[in-house]
Image 1 (cartoon, rainbow, N blue to C red):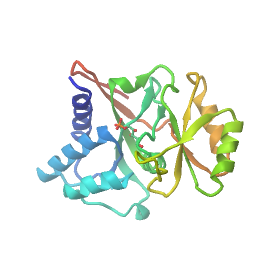
Image 2 (image 1 turned 180 degrees about the vertical axis):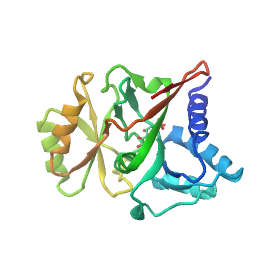
Image 3 (image 1 turned 45 degrees about the vertical axis):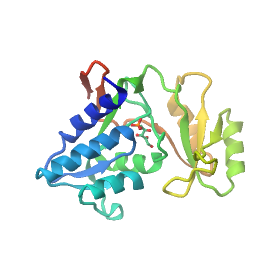
Image 4 (image 1 turned 135 degrees about the vertical axis):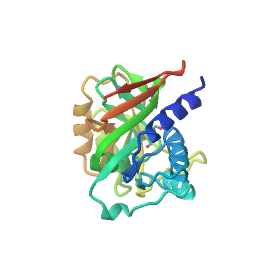
Length: 226
Ligand code: 5RP
């Protein structure tokens, strides 16, 4: 089974868990793409839900498929959010933000009664840190903020688009992608060091936010971790 087929399997599995009447949080990424496709199908078959999403991209796809949206600024609780991850360890700690939507993703997940993470088997790990850690920072004083991040011992690069221009998030912020030299023993400590730097809006570390993890394997089987 190809990686895309694994992502599709996980996406479909999560979409089939959505129930009538739910306010659904829709994440971002190539795995969530398949979740949205199946959710659109289910809505066409009669499922009645409303949604909010963590990116313009996902919003566009879902709205074009006919999914009804609520104004994110008028809700205080989401029933269930479905999102992907770049890395997830066996305790559910994650690195997210590969698609640049980490801040909105964290707002959705922390507003949700329940969050389901959908991944293919390549995303699971013993320890976090093999993947880059996206850190969202405000453009004001960018060099000073990056200097402070570097002073804490972290090295990285400002994320760019394929044409070489600076990548801006949906919140008009910049992403500084940190690359670790070692796997992380205590990612919570790294998060604290980074989030305390003025100018850092959010890190891609997600702790205690995954209620259920759906992992799709290349041989076609699915594992659910609660
Ligand atoms: C976007 C994210 C995504 O959930 C994460 O990057 C996984 O994406 P994909 O399913 O494409 O591998 O955090 O900001």
